[in-house]
Length: 172
Length: 429
Image (cartoon, rainbow over all chains, first blue to last red; front, side, top):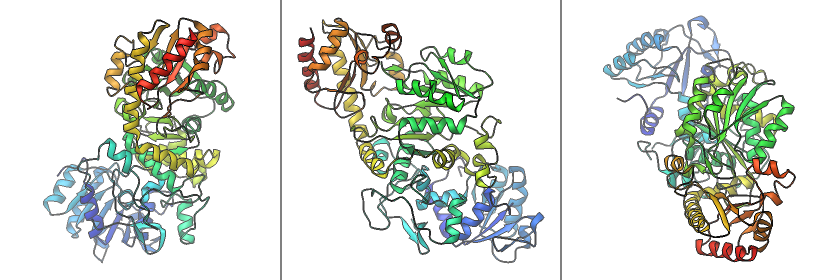
């Protein structure tokens, strides 16, 4: 599979079919990108579990922080990697071990060896992307910030039940 | 629709950024004429102010009509994001406010819109930003003007007033080697004729007032972030790379990646300096852009017909239009803007100052005014108007000698445009 760019259908398919994210490298610092993503995913109704050995046992945004993926008791659909490309390999091996369906590496993170292992094990892979940006792009929210969504549609955007300033993804 | 194929230019000009209104189903983009927006709840409000969520707070910073306009122009240019502001001048102000610190310099090509020359020479001095001038027709002069304090290069793609086509690729190489961004004012070409990102621009600015809006009814400006510059690579751009005090120590380049520049211009420059575009102007300009490809092609076709006719007239000593075979910029025009060389150009009258004054006094279809890029054909004699305060020597140096007439060719029938010039020139002698 080509990892230089992904089709909207591929990304939308993942975001529409998963329920839970583990955020590896989640920060408690409210201005860090990993904190933004955790907060945004929770806001969109996903389960979002922070993973950070230095913070294990504490809470971020009311969510218990785990030391490693293996410590999480419930199901994890997506492992979101907020670590560098080198660390992504070990994290991917763990993601395969715990039965995750998707390995997602953040903007600036790409490890083709890890991607190959994950794909062999039947997982989907996204690299050098941010789930918050992708969700906001495909739901139309990102246009409020003047960002080019690279998508056009004649369908009415779908409002979230919680308010008009929240949009949710369409199924197709 | 799948993004396996990004829609082409004409489709983007109509659809990019615009979906039916989620509240009413309105298909045309509504004019959201409001100052402010109700928060969904307290946590939502806090998220918006902390930039953790996308959404609307206050129309000085963002507005949904404006947002559609921004995404539309970003898409046409192939940029990552854009910011619409009150005018082209405001766009330049915010770009430099985001890039420069007091004591910094930037290099600008000398062949520029006169209003930009004033802004750079005088208004920017009060911010302690220094412009260093180079010659757009000699790219090597940008290299020799470089020093440690230079943080950016600024040029027009198709330059005022004589339709000079600038070798953006050559200047981009110099900017990349120096590790500084290249800013291109693409007002006269528009993305229909030229997409400067493909020639190496990092930031594109527009006066939307001209061809993009295109109908002479609204002032507006735009900043397009091409997403090509690495703001974290050096310490030269602290506004983007350093912890931002007014956002609790957030690093904008780290948080917003390849659209951080557009976000910084909005959440710092626009928030704090305030030159926002009105929602009504955003709406009118958005409507104009839907017909940009049709209008721009007609502008160019008419301009070429008029220039070719002028060349043959006895009263005319020279015509400066890059679309003409034999023009010094013709080869660059063929390379960078094969669909047409734009619609603004100058020509000289053998009868000098007097003939120029008589010509603008006797036109019936052309409007005598100081603007360009209208559906209507426009004419001005710079020596008796925009440049009348200068000495004859200064006027000549600025490309506004006594004999110079500037035209902005509209989208009327070319035969009527030519007939008007013919009758007015007959009276001018």
